[in-house]
Length: 76
Image 1 (cartoon, rainbow, N blue to C red):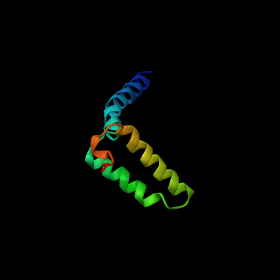
Image 2: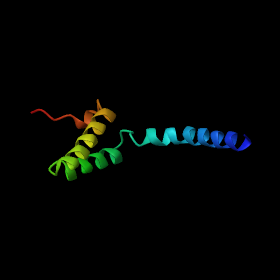
Image 3: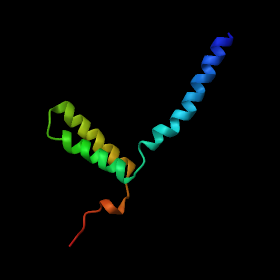
C-alpha cells in the first residue's frame, strides 16, 4: 500500500510540473512561430500524411497567435 501511495504521489508531482512545460510549447513567440511555419513549408506539398502535419502546424500557429499585428497582410 505504501508503494502505491508513493507511486501515485510521484505521478501527481510529475503531472503538476509537466503542465506548465506543455503550455509553454504553444506560446506565441518568434521562435515558435518560425518553427511552426518551417514545419508547414516542409510538408504542405507532400503526401497526405505530410499535409496533415502541415495542417496541424498551421492550425497551431493560428490558434496560438490569433491577433498578432505582425502577421497582418499590409494593404496598399
